[in-house]
Image (cartoon, rainbow, N blue to C red; front, top):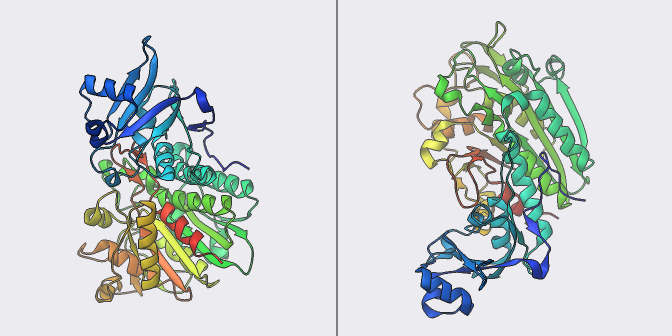
Length: 463
């Protein structure tokens, strides 16, 4: 069975064997020492080609036809392990194979695949693209699985809210569950109050699209219990504490946590990992209406803790609080939540390096190792107990928006921690979910972050 696709697109890979054109991926040393194909070498030297990182030189045949290409890796290819992503966008349309490359086969093919991504759903004209043969010593099935998870996250984030509101996100969630024959349940609208999800209802009640809680179950009882929770704010106006116009431009990506856990769930289910998987996604639009929640309101959460609303633009942690409390009730062995939660995380680490928080030192070590092994960057930040005082409110148990603005990512994580008490190991990922500019493995736009590392960790620790 092929992996699930939200947007159907052709594969970036081919299986045409000898009819493909060769690519010689080289460093400057290859040119200097002459250790490549002699025809390619002669053309490179005549053209003054230096094999700089990401550079491409097309090679003609004797009769003037396209005969192949040289691709530069720079002096230290390990600095950009997915540099072959540039090939996917730079090569002319056609079928290609790598003839030589001082890179591992998996990274070579995965990099090309990641870089091949295009979001052209709304384009009138769609152009053809190059395809690459997966090297024989690469794990083609796993590469395609990881690409499917990454592309799902990118597609969901890139889709504008008029086509990715709560109804449409639920439809995508249902389609993912159906593809892998997972159990599905949905709690919608006022039923959230009846089932004790008051904060999810509070945040989403002002929208024309009802708030809801999506849940997927897959796997076998008795295997490691893994639960994923993702923030699904399909658009965030900021509520009555309204955002300025410039800050709303990217708010279609505020469901990036949901998109990423769905991409991760796809990988897990497609690989048939031996886990007891549960995915929980609270879905809302933080809109403005006469019944919108207000600054100064106090609400009781699913866990029983009361929350004082000091800023309606700090809504993500509210819906996560109910979802995490619900997840925690089944005492999973591993609980991961992902959310586009704070600007403070971006100020601290920038858009490409998502922080994670956990009080489990062994889990932190394992996640860091998985990050290094997959070249999927993450960085641990502290759950510093000294800032617990900032999460306390004057008239309630907790505030959703500590005053002062200091350590905002940490205080948000500390807020969430109050709703996780039974789980063996928990980690919170404060992701950006967006690539502001083009990179070798990404054309820019919606982005999957940390899920390849998490997949690697879950796969290697299954029982």
